[in-house]
Length: 271
Image (tube, rainbow, N blue to C red; front, side):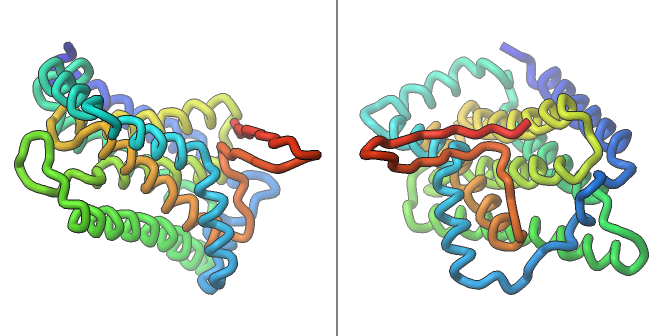
């Protein structure tokens, strides 16, 4: 079992190191890339929104946790894992709720730091592009928060600790996933070596999934709640990016197509 103070300190240092790396490497523009925020389309249309939603549903970081949430809801598996996590606290020790707040703050800080460090041009164009780029992130976060709140009020699932009936989905998990996806996309606008970009991208998602598990250990959510939250948050971020940007090449994508009565499945991963 990891003592809570050690866990909090370790993840705080990790977040600071990641932000420091971004500061070191994010001081110049990426050759061939337009200024960050400059390509955002504020009037994309419903057709583009529909395509973005369909593409986001095919993303493994959307459907895999959603499938996991469904699997956990079968039988007593959800409750059994929740009870075990609350009793054993295998990762976050005696204060997993504080750890979940810290990890959510960490991944949110990484997103905001990457947005501020990305090159957005000069002069008035810099300010205009930053406003548009940050507006995309704000839209995604507000949409995620709103959908999470609406689902909580609709499903009215009792939390494992019986504190209220707002267990499904996990708001912490959904917001963490949204910010991890936004951070991942922003990394492409920073002049990083491919290994550094991969490490940072993985670290952002690790913070999001760590946030989710900490909520389970804290007795605030069942595993299916946090998995649903992760799926929802990633879905919203991907939809916002694909709708408001002209082109998005996701870090992870699943392609399905029929060829001579055969179903071809292709998983693409960008590093």
